[in-house]
Image (tube, rainbow, N blue to C red):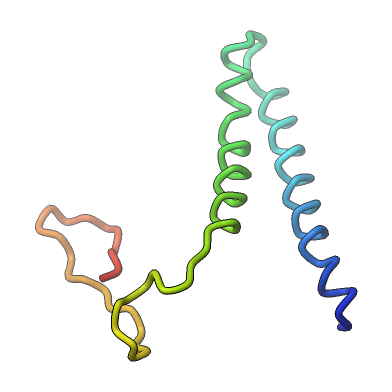
Length: 90
């Protein structure tokens, strides 16, 4: 790939994401009951995904992971006493 193709790539990715979100919103609204509150609730999850992806891709992530200068892989913390199934990074 040359430089001009790499510069156009983010727009293709965003267009694909937007198309997928639009299709999901449309399908969710058509499948919801015929009242505006149900349709708004049905349309919300793909829109929330779109907003989250946009925010995450715009956040700078330099120097956030650790204060040490050495490069080491993240470690999983031991499971919580409550038996949570979600592992947390330390």
